[in-house]
Structures are given as structure tokens and as C-alpha cells.
Figure: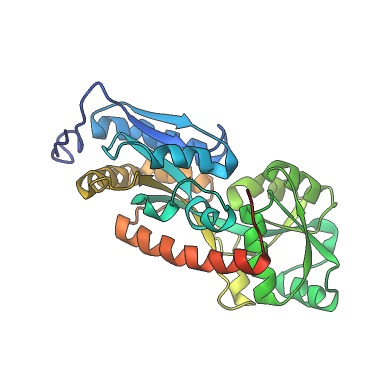
Length: 311
């Protein structure tokens, strides 16, 4: 049973005290998609008045954990912490999904983080303009790494090379780490990565950040161009959001969203996210739904055009 309480005078959501709230992370422990929900969960518990447990359910590109939440009772006890691609890209990649990603009930976007284009240091190009000039004069001679078939680095590069009218050879890896390692070693030329994962390689000096895929340049790297400055209209970022099982009542999602916004307003959370080059978001359920619908249409076209299919 739910009962709203004054935001600052007590818990914003009271659930039966013996029933904790579970936030499912559909990936293995470690990495921002795991650590950020854990940090948020610790601060949600006193606001919601019940324990908040983060549970990892990895496998099948996030689909196993997502299906678990999809089929959970819509009673406010189970939520999914998810990156945007799991909901907007996976339905177009997998032919046998046993859930419908866009039927989840959005709660809020927790944090946004940049996607960046990385290059091996020895490639010999200094910015995105030089890269496109070289690629157009040498079709098929560049290679790009990804975290695996259908992963973010794959679909984003497919969109990039289509929009830029270039051709590069895809080299898939099993995860971000191996892909970055081969980029640092010079075995592949390029790679899209979220900045959080790519930062150690950038700071080591063994890869070059050629461009940012977001709308604006990064405050910490003001000399690194956005791709859109050279290729107008090319903008893509990623985020981590919270969704609930289908048919979860709006009263529940709104109350949890209110608690999440309070957590995201905590200066300690903002400081932590800034260290990861991420930013607190807090968009509500309607804005999140509109963005997911739009992103799903964009990535459906990319996946279809590139003929990417996974089982």
C-alpha cells in the first residue's frame, strides 16, 4: 500500500516495511551502469522509507535483467536501471525478444554522459575534419572497433559513416576493455566510446579524442570539437534511466521520480557524477517517453540500413 508523505518531513513513499525495493542492473558488477544505481540507491532508501537493493542480472546484452523486470508485478517493488540503448536499440537488433522495451513505464533519466570518437595516436589526423577528408579519399582503409555486434560503438559508428558518407571496416570485440586495448596498441584506427569508459585511455595519452558526439563541447576539453560542427545534425549521447514494469500506476512512478530528483540535487551526487564527466538529469516520465520513442525510430533506421541482427 502506498502513502505519500511530505518530501522534507519524512519518506516520500512508504511501502510495506518488510518488502524492499529492488533496482535490477542488467549487467555485471562494475562500470558506471552498476556503480551509479548503487550510489543512488543508498540515498533513496531513507527517502522511500524501505531498503533499496541493487541486484545484478546480466546476460544477453541486458535482455535477461530487462525481461525479469518486465514480468515483475507492477507494485512499485521492482525497477530497472538501464542505459538508453537497451530500450531504444535492442528491440531492433534482436529477433526474439520476450518483452517490449517501449512498454516499460518511464520513471526518470538519472544521468547523461558523453559519447566520444577516439583514434589511435599514430593515425595522423588531428580533428574530425581531417579524419573525414582522409576517409573519403581512402574508402574502406580505416577500421573501427566496437564493444561487440550491435553494441553502442557499432550502431553509432554505422550512423556516423552513413551520415558522413565514408566507409570503414568493423572489428567487433567482446566488451569495451579489449576494444580499447587494441585501439591503444594501434591494431584498429577508431572507436566510439562513452567518455567514462574511455577516459583512462585518453589520459594515458595512447589514444586521441577526436570529437564529441554531443551537442556541445566538453568543459574539460574545450578544444575538442563536436562532430556536429563538421557534420551538422550528428548528435548522440547516452544516459542511464530508471523504468518500472508495464502498467505500474503513475502514482508510484511519480513518487519514485520525486525521490530520485531529490537525490540528484544532492551536491555530493553532482560532484561524483562530474568526476565521471556525467551530469545529473532528472527528466520526468513524459519527457523520457518522448525521447525513447524518438530514439527508437532513429536507431531502427540505422539497424535496418546496416543489416545488424542478433539472436
